[in-house]
Image 1 (cartoon, rainbow, N blue to C red):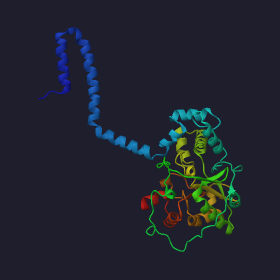
Image 2 (image 1 turned 180 degrees about the vertical axis):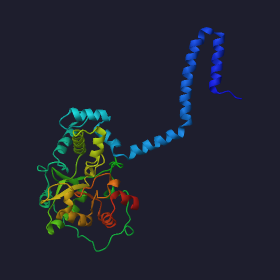
Image 3 (image 1 turned 90 degrees about the vertical axis):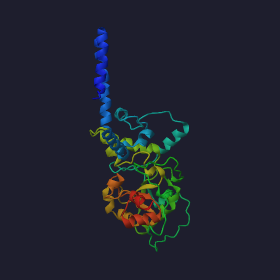
Image 4 (image 1 turned 90 degrees about the horizontal axis):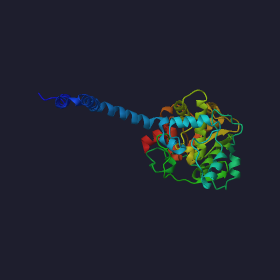
Length: 350
């Protein structure tokens, strides 16, 4: 019968000790060390499939879980959860987790971002700047409005969608802003900016609403990277102040404030909207005249309710009846008619 590795090893070292008795204890130590690592090696060999399965599950979890988003760590400089925790707890004023010297141009951008407004559902909104149609028109070179054509029903079979269409870019926790994504900001005032390509439809929508007695106001348009990081850090600190761990706070924050690097506000396609009679971003907005009008008619102007109720398991963001995203009229009409969100639209049409 063929001897095992262990038997051969013991036989070899036994022979050495018989010839050299002074090497008895060194040989015993060598045998123990070799057998120790041999059994560890054989354990992984015999359980290789099990460990591969565990690794696969871990990779899948890390790639799909909201609080494992790598872009956030890269953009904010958060090297680890512990460093992030220390940076947030030690600094009573919300700042970026890692302070680095800014170039002159970066300093200008930071100062501009600090002047931007962004309203949050859980925050007081008395000092939030909102922009009505009159405010926007006062700072916009008015152009002839295109007539809105809703005579022909739009269907997916009649219109061919292209995944490279800027209007349909998919941005979420699993799909961060593409590095080569390019856009130009249209500026109404210092605090009101958005992708210049959506301005005409935005004004057309607000004008149509006003004609029906609904005065819409934009209270959170484009946000720069620094502003988004500030809001996300702030939300994390608020939750940690309630006794949550950093990871728990991160997970909760990511369901309310989109992770930096994955926010549609950062590309100027998303807007938070309320009305002159209801200045609060909460679920109650859906029952207002403005909320109902937007839910019914925004698709006619290329906008969708980005995070609809009942789709949280897909979007990973709680229901936000005030958050609207521009996707173009053709896609918006389909999403409205089929009651699907942007992620579902991509699965079906792109």
